[in-house]
Length: 113
Image: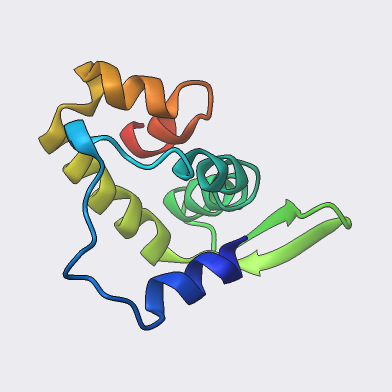
């Protein structure tokens, strides 16, 4: 799914006729990507960020094949804070459409924590 999306995103296409969905809505296909990220990236990123904020140089996380020891990455929290700023600027914590899109995924909680 992500390989296909990346190919479409970076491939040759006519962007002059592309249109954003009416009513400033995000495409319905974004839900599938958010679901995938919920079960992958946000799981290890949260463990990584927590360890980094605690001053740890390494953290352990089980990707499904037993625990893996990895180095913490400061850039993950820097990226989280950048997205947090954008979400706060949009008023995501009180925007019903944004709340509905991210409901039950833990993604807003990750960024707004």
